[in-house]
Image: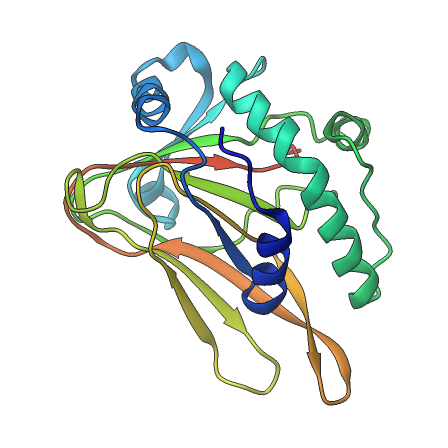
Length: 229
């Protein structure tokens, strides 16, 4: 895993609600993880999006114990993101604060009955898409999550852009499209983020999704830091 530039990531998150981590995983790691989709023993459940009105495509939630690569991403990315999350919550007047280590935050989730792992592997084919949504899952929600693109645009698929929308109070929504390449990761706000206006800090609400795939197949690894009830 390449070392992220956390000062740049923090500045981009503050400005836009999302930030790119280029080449977080190399091509071999991406191919390995994408290949896991056909190993059902790694997963606790499969969701066919069309059955629930979520869009089209499929995703699978990993079971515990997580594969070492996925566990390492959760463990290593959490601490710097927790510092950002704590600053954001303080700015928005929210009481929740997050411990420095991910294991301690998971203990809080599990004590509240949120015991099911949430990292997931998504697979899209031609015509598939993911409706705008938020990955909340329970009372304890970590405010940031990470998506890693495992396929190469233009070679493995066409279309299928990652889309983030921001609903601003008394204003029209703003859309952000992330130009990811294979191995790139996007850090983004799960639910809301602070924005400084003329009268102080206010919250904006965010949702994310994936536009329609026009051809090929697209795999994505989702790293969510809170577990599900």
